[in-house]
Image 1: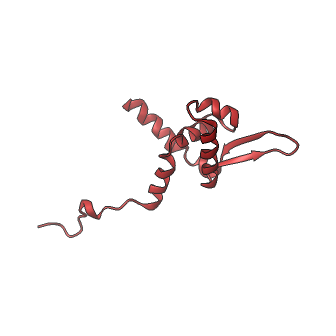
Image 2: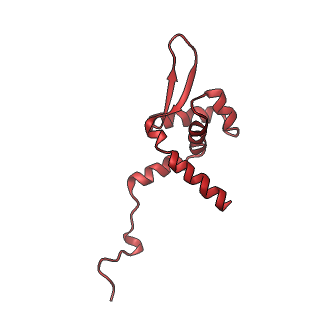
Image 3: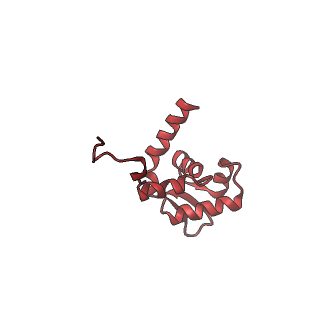
Length: 110
């Protein structure tokens, strides 16, 4: 006799918030951009471009805009300067434990 409280595989549903996070992290380059900003701190575009070497500048601009829209990355301009930097927002900083866990897993797995 089957337990009435036991879920079957067809009853399982992913949490929409979890799905949305992996929609972001699953996009090519997003995780690497976030990792560079988490590890190295605020970066100018050219420095990000040097760190995420295989990503074209066009795609990097697109990914940064998307990460800004998601509230994970902030584009910072400075008065009386042409300096523009990208940095993690407070929400983006919250991804640090996730990125650290990914490093730990990769070290053991790969």
